[in-house]
Image (tube, rainbow, N blue to C red; front, side, top):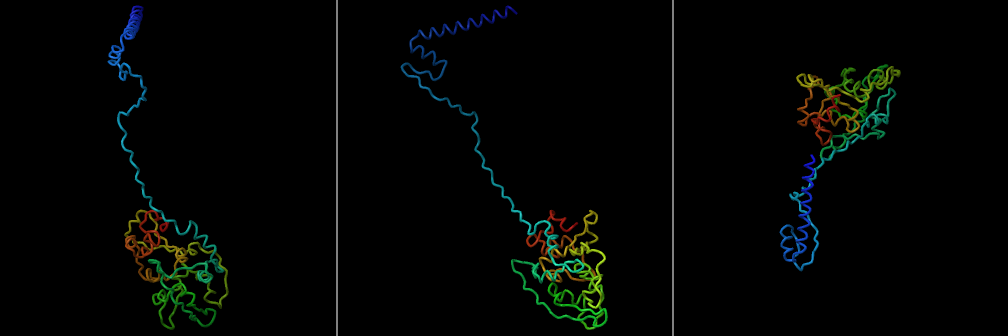
Length: 305
C-alpha cells in the first residue's frame, strides 16, 4: 500500500514539473515560436501582433428541434339548450286552474291564456290556421236526474269533429251512448267519469271525491302498445309512456288526433322504433328538429320509464 502511494505521488510531481518546464520554455521562446506551439494545441490563438478579441461562445444544439405543429382547433358541436328547464311540467301543473275534484282544467287554462297550444305541428316555421270552433250545445238526455248535455264549443276548442265522429259517436239521431264511449278521453286525459257526474248531468247532486286525483291521470299518461315480437320485452325495457299534459300545453289535441293517432280503433297497431325512425307515429315530431330524436339513445328514459 505504501509503495502505491509513493508511485502516485511521484507521478504527480513529474507531471507538475513537466508543465512548469513547458511554460518556461514557451515563455522564453519568441512570439512566432509561441504561436506555433499554442495554436497546435488550442483554437483561436491570436497571431503575433494581434490583440486578443473576446467572443461569446454559442453552443448549437446537436439536433435542431423540429417545426412546432400548430394544433388544429377541434370543432365543438353546439348542444341545443332544452326548451324547458327540468321540473317545468310539475311547476306548470301548479299554475293551471283546477276543477273541484283537483284535476287540471285545460279548457279554462286555454280561455285564461295560461297556455297557448299551437293548432298544428310546426313545419318550416309555418303554423296551420286554427280550426273553426262549433258553438252548438246538444242535449243527449232531456229529462230526469240523468239529463245530460254536451258542449261542442268546449270540445272543438281542442279536438275536431273527425276526432269523435264517426269512430266514437255515430252521426245519427237517437243513438244509444255508453259511458265507455266517453271514457275514450275521460278517465285517461280528462276528468274522470266516476265522482264527476254533475259536470255532464247537472240535475245530480255534487259528490266530493273520496280519493285524491291520481298523478297519472293528472298528466294523462298512457302506456303505448308494444309488439309482442319486440326484443325489448326480453331485455326488460318498459313500454313507452305518453304524457298528454306535456304535449297539450304545446299543441292542441287535433295536432295528433286523428292525423297521426286515431282516437279509437278496435285493433291498436303497436308502435315500433322502425316506425319512429322512418318519420311515422311519434317520429313525425321526434326527429331531432321539432323534438328530441326518437332513436337518440341518450333520451330513452324520457319515454321508457
